[in-house]
Length: 487
Image (cartoon, rainbow, N blue to C red; front, top):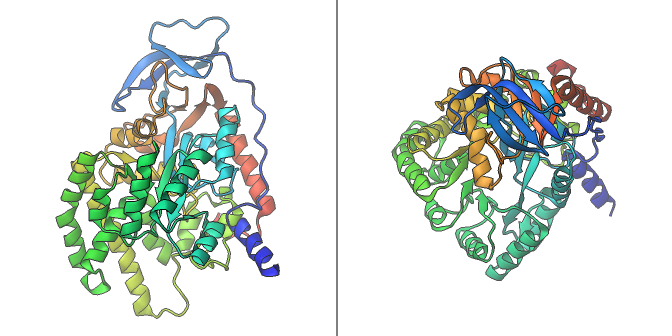
């Protein structure tokens, strides 16, 4: 009993459960009518701006966009002269865990929608609170990962990582129905399924209208993936993993492995396009891994570490490959027992792994596979909200045009989720970001944020900064390890 309490306490702390929760600052009530005037508005195609427009919002929804609109006297007016209005961004691979403060970090960075990829009952409560008016991003809550472990391992996985366990076709059917009844928006396939389980889960999905998303299981093959009706894959790397196993990757044949990925990538991308499978990027995280291994201090110094929930950044020694960010607990760190040769091998592995993802992304772009901007938020070093801008920069550097990147962060995920967001057009929800600079000219302009409009509620730059300061203050009170050296 003592061990259970001790372990449960530390696991809750690791997921941010013991960090002081910041109070959302009080803002004025949402205006009944909001008019943003003289502003350049991003087209639904994400590739151009219409100048000198007035966007009229009523009761949280966009009602008109015109250069001729004259706002009524009772409208709250925002002069957007010289600025650029874009849809609010979506992080399609977020992990809130128990970090409710992160909701403010997302909004302060213009992220007005997130897809929580390992949901919980608590996340469903937060989703409802936001729908009822709490300031935060709209949340599409994907279920906990569906896996197949033995009974004891399954119990421990459910306790420590929210996984849900099934061990038979009937078990998968019952589990899928239960998750649907609990209110989840999609079902997530875990990495821990074999081919038979994966197909059984797919069969169980026929009894629900929910989509199947997430991983390609470690013990499944690409042929299994083509046989199931999975509409989204949580990382580009999910297609590198089965190729790595098929090829038999080792440190000695790394160059040959990259050639193998090039040979297979076009065929994979073409089949993804034919099946209309959406792929979430998480590219910035993978690109960071070689540096996390060799120069983590520099990465931590460049990150917005002060906004990361201390429970997550400080991690715990109870779980060796858990969430910790700092050098003593970082999952990608060198181990003390490794010699120089082993360390060199680790660095080369991550460099080649990153290169393989870029090869796969190139093929997907050539075949016009729909890409979703996602960051794997709260995995080191992906700071909630801030990481979306890093991801957009990484995708642009990797070959996506600024228009493609903006669409991947706005309209493409909105259509996949079935939400009337992601575009600035009449009838759509007024989740928008007012920028000082043009992101089509430079994708880095996505964080030149002057104002964020959430459900028709305009939040000024000073209000957004107040949200950031509130989160930082709560984190500072809860922090056990100083981060001064990384500031």
